[in-house]
Length: 313
Image (cartoon, rainbow, N blue to C red; front, side, top):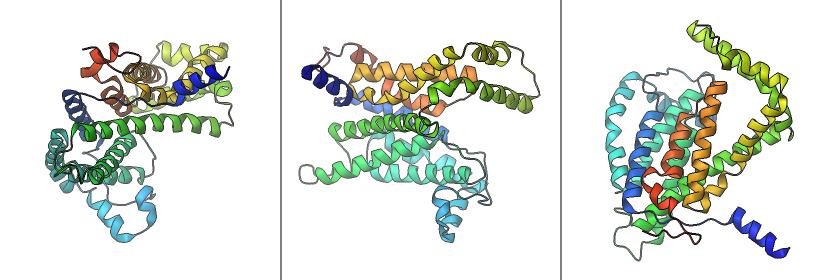
């Protein structure tokens, strides 16, 4: 019994370090750079903070004015072109700390403006969280390598790059686990039992789409599916319960290449089904999962990974 318990704990808790090849890391940084650029709403402008959120809640007027500076059309037009410089530096893997700080300033400022405009969203929050985790990683590795490397802050080695990539995965996994735990707490641990009530949310989403487009849809998802959930509530509990279990189990993606690939593909499939059923689109999360979990250039190595975490190349 003790041996079985120890094996269960090993499966559930132990992280397995992955030494990605240089081309994998380069591809991850390139794809994530595109996600960073896409996460900024370049067309939205802001002149006030009607409902301060995040940094704006500090109430410090100079900070609020600095945030609003990023809401001007002229500022966004300049940043839209200038941001390619830190993005290119980030992709190249050189002087990552200044590059990531520059990108963080833009994503946090624009995100704060959006969440202070009356509506709260977290679609793009994952981008800033990953950048923050990678910034902390490079700071730590730079301090740790000060005596062994002449200029680790200028050109981090593969170990430092892998550490930053690993913390990006930890951040994504933690975000999903927090989301799953929040569902349980907010529902008094009745999320699965109450999931058939989401048919109401589906109907609201359908009507919201109608008022946005003035096109009344008459397909399976908008008409028949909510009724089926009411008639067969256990199917809804099975579907949304599986999604909750997947969120809570996202930490398993840290156990190795195969686990990351399996969990990543499962999350992409689940998000696609949510988009189809409830019109809840989380493209940024899906792209981050594809970049760091699925790891397209490393799929061959993931499929050939052995039990000890090594690949037979």
